[in-house]
Length: 194
Image 1 (cartoon, helix red, strand yellow):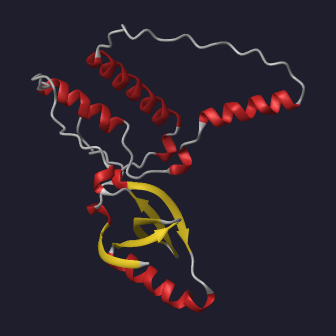
Image 2 (cartoon, one colour):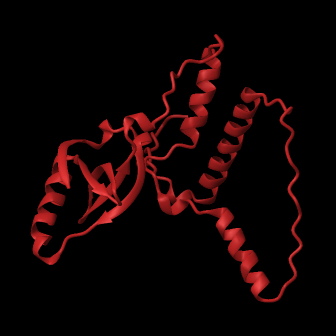
């Protein structure tokens, strides 16, 4: 394996990532391994590496996470399909539309990504069906109705509905959990004023 250079992780567009693997060390290389992990963590850098794996020359990123290294197989530039990013029409969103879109994004934003909050729902349903079938139950599956491609969606109306639903959920959550809402110090009443 040849490490070509070290770069900040944010300098690499995620479109280049293909697969992820765990990198370990043999007993005699553990100290050097931990030294590399710690130095990369402290500096906020990842290593770009090249080596032949399974008979093919490849480009990889080695990334430090607490206590270990991850190896990400990457696509080469010529394997990425180019996209010019230009819109076909000349329609530009207005100020009110941008404000509504920003409000929607802000209403369902989180400070960090929590992978534990997301589950493969399809796999869960399949596992439930397998469990029921293994218990001898007869399964009756209903085909889902297909949506016609001629349906026209009013994006602004959907945005407004989504913002309203999100606000209702946030309001219900704050009413249901009042003890979790941080409050500032209570203001003292001023005597003699009405």
